[in-house]
Length: 425
Image (cartoon, rainbow, N blue to C red):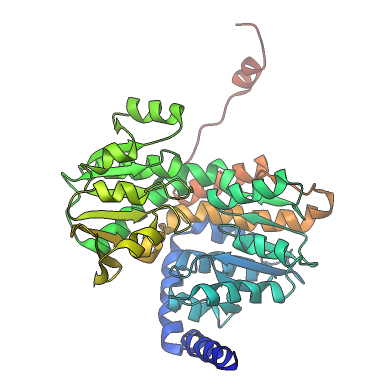
């Protein structure tokens, strides 16, 4: 037991050594500045609150993908006076240069390639610092706070669909211990981040991993929520033949009328070249479907957790698994057929690429920033449940983003406002 403990501590010192690397920190600062220059909406909001420092004296625990875009959010929180403690929201999504840069300004427990044990340890370190507000992506930090019965947390926010689903389950059971703002449910988040951000960055990851042509390929998108819509649209834009797999009849009809083939996963398995999961659900590509796939089929996941593809059964039954390219594992099935698994079945846009573009993330992270300010001011008057982003915050974020893009809007006239409130023609 002592040997195991010493080995883990040794590994942690080794990995944390990366965070203290000045060369990496310098690279991280360059990437931070690149993202910051393309996230004007968020930086303008940050400057607005830099003098008043509404988060002064507040410890904010953050569990997000440690990317250049996240570093701009951390910068905004720091300018607002927060004491920030940061862990990664996925073992393979951290950009080490960004972690190194942020470690010069905040406490960071994150590095690329964490084991499951190390990942859990990092999340717990954030809670051990006694944060009052939590900003999460996937709800691992929130779930850990509930499991540990953290006494300091007064509220928080949640970034993604999967995390909101988990928190809804806690709320339904009457176990939610503090109010949480569901940032994922904001229109200025899911209409853009989920659709355009994931749509583009998923193919960025697939292309970096495989370097293959998408045009002419048969791409199967499993799930037609906002993420699936974005992925399917980008696949079509790259001239792929797109099939959608759904369990929801309304979404299936929508996909059909959007011009996609719609069928079951087992039907699609026989002809697909590239399979992309986007559901937040478990084993939507079961091992039985993989057995039906043709030689060379590619499996990728665009969902938050690595449960959408039944990776455990796939690797357990495989004759062999070997890495043939960075983030590409060749899996030889018992029949001798080869399939290729990208990023170990984890979120491909962050494992094999850099995640969402900064222009999209400025909206999501503006919502996160404003949610933290709102929670600080109002937590004691809020019910212990999931809350929407306040409508005025959504409007503020939308206008800030339009301003950053140089886009102006018309304003309704008095006559039009009067007309919209009248029943007369």
